[in-house]
Length: 292
View 1 (spheres, rainbow, N blue to C red):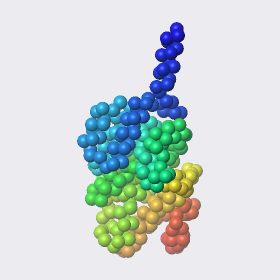
View 2: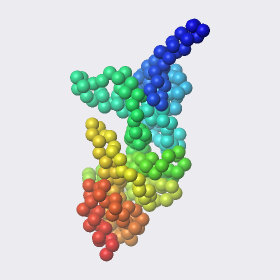
View 3: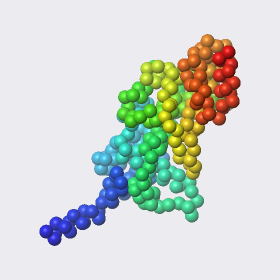
View 4: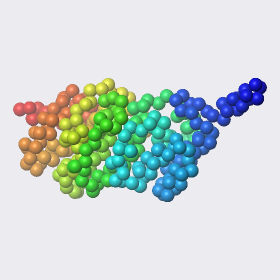
């Protein structure tokens, strides 16, 4: 009996339990290695080697990393678009904190073990975890959209395992703001063909992206780099920039009828959301003009 108690105690000491996630010392070492390799611009082959040698619980996470680093077209696969498991979201948050920690002065940097212990012990808002995941993979979608025509591609948000309207909105902003960023860049630089960007935009739930209006959730604090801010002011505000650019490009090209369609079927005609945009005065002006 005494030997059994000693064995149980030994097992407890070899495993650290952090809230919803339990990792052995060996698994903590594996997670550290994976995140370190990701942050140094590793080659795809290195990730495949890590995938082969890592415990089963890390394989889905590593596969997401492979796609996010070197497989632009794979970014459209449901395998990476769907809501990840909670454990995978935690692993991605470790990547985030390793990255930001590396930008700190030496005197303020934490050890990587301190970062992992904090993340695994703390209760991090799942909205922050999910938003971080889609932010980390957004570079692949932006890269793909630079040249790809996604007009026939349909992002079926309701089939990706999201729990509520907030999570669906997080995904929506990931897709549309990543693609729509091209409009802002072109209008700012005067280079390229903005109309081609509009024509290449993907569908959302089988319809034009601008028809999506499921934003009646409670706004929440969003953690950026070293500061908290309103989630909607950042992301819904950026989405308004996409819509404004889209509508104004249509007007500039004497496509007033199409511009009215955008206005009537999008949140450009929903003044209750204007407060979240840095362009509120512009939105108010357009609203009054379009309602005349």
